[in-house]
Amino acid sequence: MQHLPLALLALAACTPTDDTADTQPTVDVCAEAGLPSSYDQVSADYLALEAATFALGDSVMDLFHAGDIDAIWTMCSPDVQALVSKADLESIYDQVFETAPVDQLIGRRSMGVGRGMYDASTWDWQGIVLAITWGFDAEGQLSALSINQASDLPEPYPDYDSSVEFAFPLGCLVYTAWGGRDELHNYHTYYAPNAYAYDFIMWQQGGTCAEPCEANEDYWIFGQPLYAPAAGTVAEAEDGNPDMPPGEKDPPALEGNHVTIEVAPGEYLLMAHMQNGSVLVATGDTVERGQHIGNVGNSGNTTESHLHIHLQDQVVYGAQAESMPQDFYGIMVDGEDVARGMPAGSSFVVPGD
Image (cartoon, rainbow, N blue to C red; front, side, top):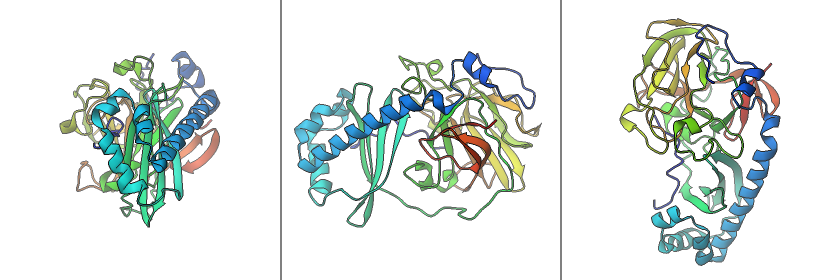
């Protein structure tokens, strides 16, 4: 299970407990929990922060093209300066920007995580697709930087169309950190077992957590109820793994506390990183669509509380399994009704009316 790769972007490196079916929360429940229930509640803040982040990203690109390493170094946060030297920045300039300009933009997105924002883009550079990410903290300092060649690997099930109508597993407005079928919006695409996976978090008030963002409870999504997106039989359920402190991870546990439901012959829906002690089902149980099966946590190989969910062709997650495309039905994406769709990274999603 790949975790949110958000701490690794430095180059050179009131929760309901009812377990009955059809208990998706109402707007009032979201408000009582201090969580947004519609895109309108977050869009202005998010888009303003996105615009500011893109402007900062443009500044970094301009400075690299100009070879002004001192100015870039001045923008770097102390944490980045501890990991990346001026010589490293000069090497980036020599190998990339001095060789040829990076000016053929293919795609661009933002990603809000923690109390920061990322400017991610892809570029056609001498026939090579470069993936470039600049991260900025709340003070506008350069908190992360990454330049890599995009992998562009083939999809494991490019034409597969599941007949299962998957409901959205969370009740209040969530933010798609990773999702979709291209690497810019979904880093999972480089690894077949995860290729179509989603990572969902919650964003409001400038970030995915409340200051100081040091405990899991500071993260908006931590402890939120998780509902079965489809009926089926529990093929695997695990609980008892600790919720890791933010920024730390437990790679041996991979999925952490998780539930895998056989939703159709040869189709297994995995929901991972659940809260310790929250799993409400056991292997062999039959679950109904909309049934409360546990809560979102931060267990396993993850650096921030989130829901990882994907459809796969085998019970056990691992190199032998392959992810399968999974659409959600009856959702709203960035305030628009979507009868059926695959939310892409950077989009806000909530169940439809």
